[in-house]
Length: 361
Ligand SMILES: Cc1ncc(COP(=O)(O)O)c(C=O)c1O
Image 1 (cartoon, rainbow, N blue to C red):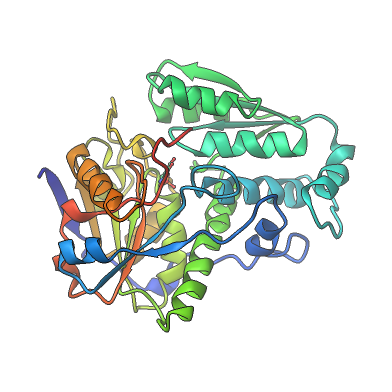
Image 2 (cartoon, rainbow, N blue to C red):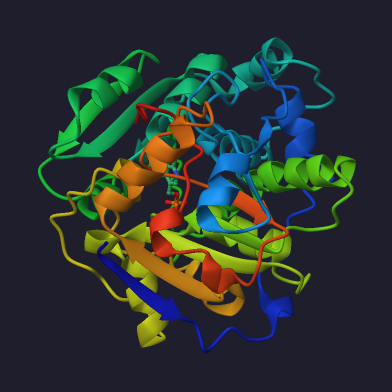
């Protein structure tokens, strides 16, 4: 099976990886916030015995993010926290003590009508659109050319307007950045020079996933996973995992991305951000990114031991394998494994999926 593998010789002092955000006095912690959103429940951590047997390791667990706050991916955790921090920290709204989304919406009413803007190559745009809907605001979501009609419909179903940009995801990001104004808040999961606060909050919002995993493994009597494998687009989720496991030194982190869009691997190999030009046509739709987030890249560089780029056939095989365990996964994936024999027994073809069967934008 086609793949490219990079053993990162430069992981450094992991203590320099961005620490998990503890929230702020005004906003509280991401988990406290997520608990107050409609439909919050910890997602299941599934033990996959058939997958472990197939890979020749002791145990494999997958954090199943196919249903998170009513959407088919974990992305809403980052998008919702970034919107919240933008209004509390950047716009300075005093939201006081609120208990549910209705109360939050009424506290934000003095702002008047607002619009959220985001570019997306995966689930982030739909998550931003959902947040706008929950707050009674508009949303404008930009998608790259070639985005599947079903994904555009998924975003539209949240009441957002969808603009198709004639270009790649990275060009959609550039266009979205130009839409920022007093009433239009750009909520991007990737960063660029001068735009770091919001993507930092997106990364912080993902900490809820790893906080839940820690609690779930503790219940199982485990301190930490031996290996965690994370799928990468711009690397924001990978950075959140880097922050969660980076300083513990107990866990080996492995990042995975599509062969045609392996911008994080190329950048870690080069020791600096590298653009991987499109077209990016992988079936791993949310991972089709040609430019890593400058905010995420140093964290990955510091804390990931191995980076792997795989072809679509590996994702398809992983989906089939997961289906045998009753996990209906999509092409983009994220498992947590533990108790494994040395990591080298985790073959590139064996990466796993924990997202939705039909990832919506
Ligand atoms: C299910 C899923 N996993 C991973 C990613 C990539 O995450 P990141 O861009 O933070 O690396 C996406 C992006 O949309 C996604 O939808």
